[in-house]
Each structure stands twice: as structure tokens, then as C-alpha cells.
Amino acid sequence: MAFVVFAGQSNMGGLYMDASTLPAAWAASPLTQIWDSQSKSWVEMQPGANTGYSGQPYTWGPEVQFAIDFRAAFPNEVLHIVKEVDGGTPLNQDPAAWHYDWSPNSQDELFARTASLISDASASLGGAHPTAVFWGQGEEDANTAQAAQAYGDNLTAFFSAVRAQWMADPTGKIGYFQIGATPAHAAEVRAAEVRVDQADPNAASFDTAGYPLQGDNLHYAAGGYTAAGDNFFQLYNAWRAADPGVAGGGASGGAHGGGQTLIAGQGGDTLNGGSGDDTMGGGAAGPNYLWGQDGNDSIYGGAAFDNINGNKGDDTIDGGSGGDDWLVGGQGNDLITAHASGNILYGNIGNDTLNGGSGAEIIRGGQGDDVISGGAGNDWLSGDRGNDTITGGAGADIFHSFAGAGLDRVTDFNQAEGDRVQLDAGFAYTVSQVGADTVVDMGNGDQLVLVGVQLSALPQGWLFQA
Image (cartoon, rainbow, N blue to C red; front, side, top):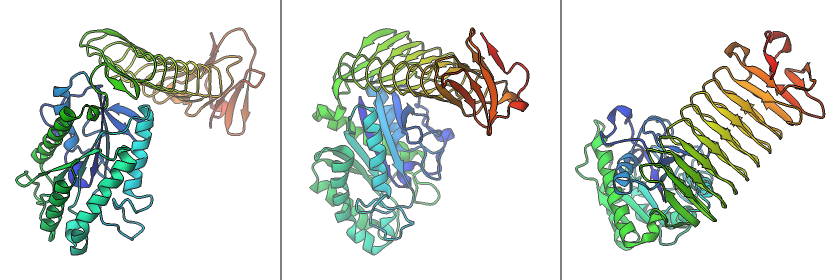
């Protein structure tokens, strides 16, 4: 497994790039994952959809060519990327409360925000830390003499803080580019970048002079972003060849966080994680049978059928780009995400979060207080036992309950879309209006609450027993 970070300002973000300018070699893979800060989960990287940044949600930057090169060199290894970019942001501390900067001394600004993202991503990987950080910034500091003169000292302090707070490794590897733009004090910033490179044995930079620029003579054109991605990967590959620890245990079967990294071959495979916090990935062809066993595992399916069971521990399970998967959390507080359609999700024991894909799913929470989202399509959704929160999403969904299920809340029941309630047969129930909600009461505290729904407005047949 590889875990890397891309951070900086707009030339790291890919200003004005979109899906139409992607490199021809790009191909999506369930083994190429990017951290989604909203859902706090790893998702398949889709440039132009989830590689953007603040104010530029549809862009892509050097991380795309890096991922292309990585996938060519390590086709069966999971790549995890955290990307945090904000345009027009200096490294020099800005005292204005409204302005973001990257100084580690600024509270609740970009450095701290990125540290929080990395902490969440690290926790989802069983405590693994990024082994390489790629940095692209400096153009903003080149606008003023004061910031440019301080840039070398600021960059040295920044790298020290990155290693301490982002990487938990005082010798962590950092790659960065020397700015190629032409603000008034760009030469001073570039000179500082070179000095830091020469003084820091675990940092390396490269010159971007000659990279193609857009019409503003500040931001790279598509070829510049791909060139930067190539250079970042060359640094990473060299570090990895010299120090196997940079791989993060990434070679198939290698150690990772006390566990293993196991990647299925191009055909179908059966993989068992055993003890420890494992990272597992399914092959492209399938079928794949992936069993996490003990530990807090991260398990990713392939493009074909996957049967995934996290078993014990707080597991992160992603079915991959294909559909028709069977995804089971097992014991622990699990995060389960499906894609496409035709999937079956079961949280089992624990307080689980289950997210359906784009089509019809069967989702059952199991024991515990679960959060269920059906996504698009006509889904069958059951909190099962425990006090659950269920959101159907678009489509004609069926919300299931029974005597002994606990207190479940449906957040978006929509009779206009064809949503209905299914109760098991063989027991009595009552239906009443309680405030703004319609409540199906099965006795002994077991209720299904349709939030914000008026009972008088529900059509015939909205509830049935079977």
C-alpha cells in the first residue's frame, strides 16, 4: 500500500483543468483511491470529479500523472492520495483572520486543516502515515519582498512541521517544485527553494522552467501538470528503491501496520487477511473473495463480483467500480460503500455506516445503531436491530421493519417517488401522526418514524406486511 499527500496552492491544484484535458493514458482503477473529506472515506479517484479544490471542484493536477505512472509500475498495489489545495495562499504567516496561509503557526488554517484530513485518513488505514508529501507553492510569497526574503526559513520550518504532524517521521520524504511563474520576487523564492533542497537530505526539488503555461503566464497548461506528476513519481520511485519503508509495506504480501497488503491477481482470488490491520484489493476480472479477519482492515473490490467480509474490527469496505457485490462488515463499527447497482450490504454487529450505489440495492444494518444511505435506484433498506437512521435517496425505496427492530428514523420518505414501508407479517401495529412525523408503532418501543411526513397525505398501499 502507498499513502502520499499532494498539497499547496493553485499550481498543485490544476487551475482550469477539467475532464476534457486529461492525459490519454488515464484509466480509473479501484486501487487508486483519494480521500473524500465530506464522507471521510476513501473513494475511487475520478479526475475532474473528486480531484478539485476550494472554488475549483472539477480540476485535476499532478496527482493524475503520478497515479498513471504508479499504476504502470505497481499494477496490483493500492495507492492512497490525500489532496489539499487552496489558491493564492502564502507560506508566510498572514495576520488577517480571513486569509488562509500555510504557516504551521497559524491556528485553524491550511496547515492544521490538512493535518486533520491526514489524521482522519490515517485512522481509516489502521494508523498508517503518509510516506511521501508532494508540495507545490511559492508564487504568492513571490509577490512581496518581505515574504520572498523569509521564504527559505519558512520552508525549512514548514517541512519540519510536516514531518512531525503530517508524517510522524522526522526523516519523511518531501518532494516539491521550484516555481516557474514570474511575479516580482520569483527569483528570490526559487533561490530559497534550491537552498532548502541542498540543505535537507530528505527533500528534493525540480525546476519547472520550460513547463508550458496558460495565457496568464502563471498557471501550468495540461502538459505542465503532467510533467510535474512525472517528476514527482520519479522522486517517489527513487526513494522507494533506496528505502523500502517509503512503500509503506506496499508490495503485495508485505507488512502494513502489523497486518498485510494483499492484492488479488488479474483473475479471481480468495484472500484472508488474518490478524492485524490489513489492506486488501480485488483483481480486475473476479470473482474475488476477500476476508479481513481480525484488525481494522481496508478492503477494496475490483471491477467484477466481490464477496467481502471485514469480520472483526472497524473495517473500511469499498466494493470497487463494479456492481452485484456482497459486502459484509462483520463485528465492529464498519464503513461499507457500494458502487454501480445490484449490491447486497450487511453491517452485521456494530454501529455501521452503509452507502449504496447508483442502482437497486439490498441493505441491512444488522445489530447496532446504523446509518444507511440507499443512493439512487429502487432500494430495499432495513435498519434491522438497533436505533438506525435511514435515507433512501432517489428512487422507489422500500423501508423494512419488524417487532423487535428498535427505533428507526427514515429521513426522506417520498410517496411521490413510490417509497413504501414493509413490515414483517404476523404482528399488530398502529400508525399515528406525532407532531410533524408519521409513526408506525409495533409496541415495546419499536417504531419506524417517517420524518416530516403527514399521515393524511399518504396514498393507499404505502404500508404492507409480507
